[in-house]
Image (tube, rainbow, N blue to C red):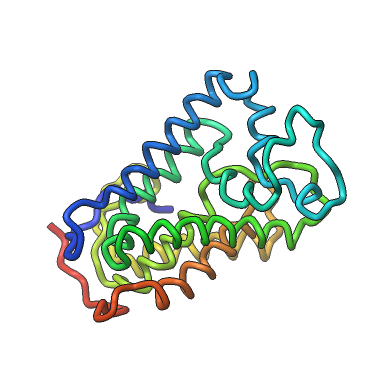
Length: 232
């Protein structure tokens, strides 16, 4: 698979993608606090309190009062700020760093915030729909980031992205091939029912939401499927 490093795709409508930067900073800070057991005293307690738990959302089970801090609907967003480990966080934030700024540029700051949280919620709801009785908390920004991947692919399929092929070889590749392969990987894991602790359905929920919402939320005049730029 490919690990994105940089895209040659300058922003055109905003001076700085400060919402993307703020989301990365806030998510990293949240993980640092959870990792340091500064939230409710343990990582597990934080995951249960702020993660999206299908059985709790569906009213099948209840959390202990000490951990029942937010309504289930709020956790459709807060779960995206909690991660299992540093690699989980780093992977999501790298994708957001490379692709989020151009999606923010296409929508504007306020609409991008709404887009990001809506994709996070869509990912969580898809996961809950598929596993309604699960007591395991869903955590991580993958659903929201998947929405950004879908939006970027709709906006800039022909832009070249510098990526590490197989995690080792730097290679410029068009977004349509790199992100298309990433999407195909999600579908592959669902079709073959790969169970490795990753919610592939949350990724799919975010992808669907991103593909739909980018059409609605992009600025008037911003084209879909632009021709992109050559690698540098």
